[in-house]
Image (cartoon, rainbow, N blue to C red; front, side, top):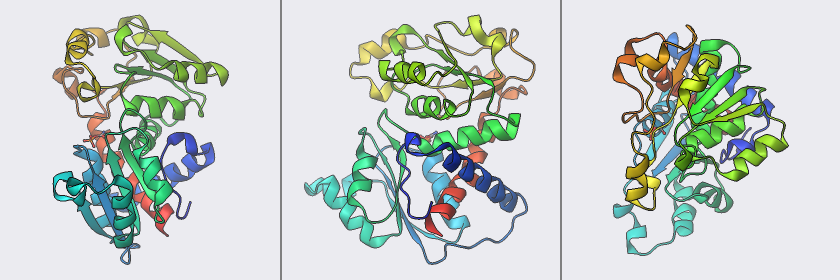
Length: 303
Ligand code: CP
């Protein structure tokens, strides 16, 4: 995978995904054993974040530094020359001179793809608009594998299937691994027709539902997403759907004993805080799994 861009989960073959997941297990062992593993001491990685982030930016920075690389942080468009009218393309063609790899988050769908097209150094998409968040998906798959041992499970994806890039990326990834996918959403947040058509055309086993209670007892994994308020063109549209779903202790009474609940985070109010104390809650463990995944990606792309 040397020098490859990671822009969309759809660009990765099943074997590429498996390679990353296997490498992540080695990285996890290195982390757990606190081994010295400075394989990127000659590398500089630019983190270009044009949207807020806690987990993705910090875990990429952690991964780079844990492997011995240096990091350039570019996360204030106000202090870049874009504020003086410089184009996005010119900015990328400048930053590529200062680094060996660009990690980019951007509010516009397609921005990471455009960056990769003009950059001579590899580009990793850390989330572009409503489109894709491939490294989140890799850590989601890794979490399921580490917690359940297989991806051939009944996996529910609940919430904002219209705007959440994490959900979109995960649906495409699970379709490669014979998972049975339950898409659970309020009508206002339906998945795009192209996603449903893709699942149909590829004979993926999937179910559409508007009610978590209807399907909860069948699920092995429940992946919850936040309503992406910042993506709504109209705040009234958001207000109409706000609070329309919530995972509660009452709903979980019907769930399998070994159901695990994941969430890419940040959470607003879609999972009751009481659930954090239950054995179902794995979303903070999921945060940890982002570290070995991002270390694995840097290792495979840069060495
Ligand atoms: N999951 C995720 O992308 O979180 P951040 O927005 O905090 O990076």
